[in-house]
Length: 132
Image 1: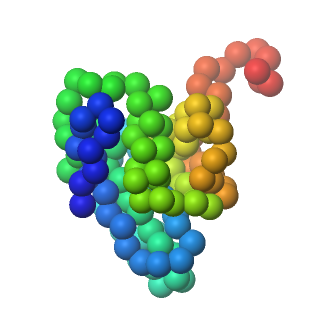
Image 2 (image 1 turned 30 degrees about the horizontal axis):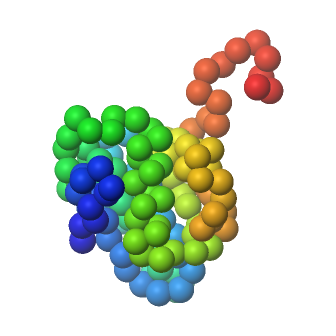
């Protein structure tokens, strides 16, 4: 399926199952099919599973528009609104996790129940002071 963002970029996504919604975001250079085994497991356990190919990845439009992690977060936010999703469990690996961090930074935790970070530090630059 396809969704058109407010900046007119076509985003490819899959929406399968019913029940608690889980949105899976892949890392940089990857695409939604990387989640196939996770998707199958979640569907077998009565979750609604939404996978998204981020702009410039997989089947989504490849464009010079919105080359920012904040725009990726806005794409997810717009899709959640479009699908009228609430209490979402967001799961992301690498850039997908960074997209969830950006989502929370911009939109707060609205529409979210939980976020699972796989292989991404919430702090992008290491410094001597590890706490900020």
